[in-house]
Length: 171
Image (tube, rainbow, N blue to C red):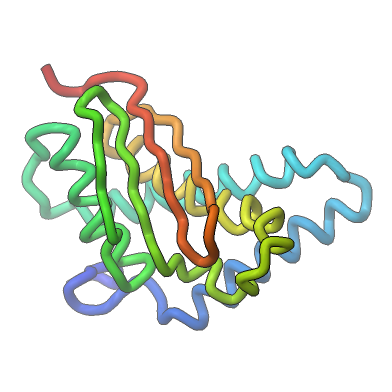
């Protein structure tokens, strides 16, 4: 199997992945203190990094996979195999309106679990979600799906991710 096979282990052990993610956040926000003060620019950097990682990871995960039959099939793969590879668990809930909008819910999102559950920490959540939004957008892009991926947190450490498909890839 490959290093990235969800069946034989995952991309990284949980602790090293969380440490790496935190170091990336620290690096981007520290460099911002030295000039770049635009939080939106930092979020965009994190999202773009995630996009590139998501593309590469999906490439490896799907190299021996049969072609997906439709968008729902793709989203099920993202919720099971892709999410398990990255976060060691499946998405807790997948909903769709059958018109190109998919909502993924992770009730114990690992990258938020180190933050306290207090309301004051909710404002910190976007920087912890940007990389993952990019990760999913990159993964979908690799499969030919253009999308807008957003995330929101109302209760820590739960995360709800909203995926809007821009272009239908199946007729």
